[in-house]
Length: 97
Image (cartoon, rainbow, N blue to C red; front, side, top):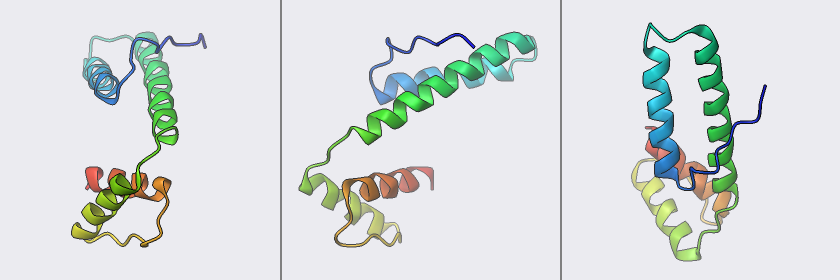
């Protein structure tokens, strides 16, 4: 597998837009298996980049508190002393709900 260049995707919106494009292309019945596998490799690389971006994100105490409050309002249990990682996970779970 060749390394996929994801350098032109620097923000979450850019990554999610490209992932949406990939999904659309893969669903097309005229796309070859080889092209679908190439797109799959690109999607994995983009997903890894997005995870790295989340892992590198440092939330201010105010942002972490806001995420915790939003999660609590959605019925999610988040500890008061939740770290930034837990706040990110709560926000991610909220978006996927």
